[in-house]
Length: 401
Image (cartoon, rainbow, N blue to C red; front, side, top):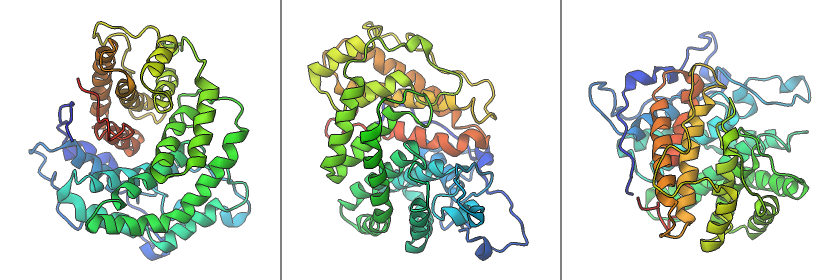
């Protein structure tokens, strides 16, 4: 795969915020039911004087994160006293990385890098970490949690979208050949019962959703719809594809003059406008999409300039909410490139969209270097989504610069 971004030079010393915290030494790992990750291969970045690929740093962040139980932010309905349990008991696979959805896309990050063979020196370690979590027993625990009372809206839609991205990744790997394909098939088969429950919950919800959710955070519908569509297209679920496409067009076909001047708000990690544009390129093609985009974002320049959209500023990277804006820069980058991928080759807006994507993506990648866990536990996934072209059709590839 050809990257148009420069490879970031990241040092292991900057990632100390993702080291595994000490827990109560009086509790054994067995009692906690927590997998304690052990390196099975050397970290290719241990020599802090040697530059390395960004992917190595991102893999290390996720490996140190997916089984890091605390600190933890639970969004959890307690039905009885037994529900007052530690995260690893409630959701035995996706309990790390501060919250359920971050644990999910941490697993996706590792699966993506492993499947694409982008960090071959770490393949064994990544496979061991995934195998330790993708067990039948642990997935049964996740399934039991989702089947509990009052949990149909759990992690909807953001976390559910990332889960479907994870199974999409495994499905793509499983469609190939070799030992990775065989292993991916095993993991996917184990996850499919949970996938079925999640898909059922989404299909139950979509017809009832009367309005789009235009927030710049987890509840946003446009971002989730994009990942739902990508999953449906890869899994062959025509019902899901039809539901999402119909709802997308109902919500956004007549959108005009999206107020980019109002963005970003202080805690956004998703652009309310650009995520809609990135979603619509999945349901409209060619001149139809180009015409719709002219009405939706008429201020996109045609002179190749990048200053029309300012990079989000983070004044305190230790603040878990303010640091969202680092993620906004990365998600804007992939949305802008997604938009370009759907425009005709001679569209004069392409150069400015790509210039702004590069500006935002580079700024976002710099933020992943933070040693603060409030950002590092999730920003690596956003950076990986951008730099590995996830979400852009493999048939068309990334837009040419």
